[in-house]
Image (tube, rainbow, N blue to C red; front, side):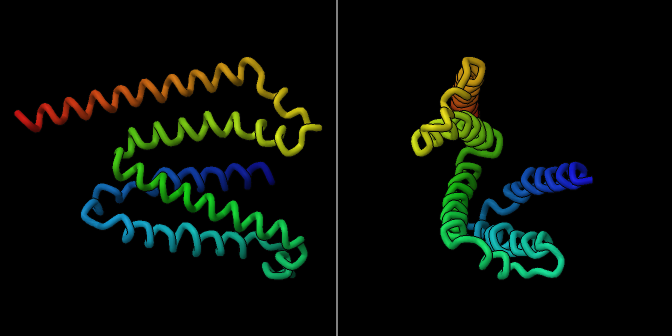
Length: 171
């Protein structure tokens, strides 16, 4: 049952993420600040609070769980949440200026490549006894190189498309 609930949560999250940029073509005339305040209220405040309240075990409160943890954990959670928010903001701006197809390809490909490498590197920096760099096998590094080559190809294709569109607009 727990696996089914986990898969259901992933499916709902994937649907929400993939549909979050659907209105981008209808609101091009909006300033990006207007779009992001609406998105921010729902995605960063209302839905996370609703999810947190729904996830609290019966008979407990969210504030009780916050008080049960060490304050360092709470502040680190808040800090990384802020970093996530900054990343979400810059990701949204890349969608606006690069377009959804090119922006998604470049941003998500870069995140995948850097995310794969940065985890073991940072773990090895702060916890050298874990030997986290051993997890960067040849296959993992080759996969990251393939990802970066794919990003480069997408970038070249996007540049060619932009030049092609500029040429057709001048004619």
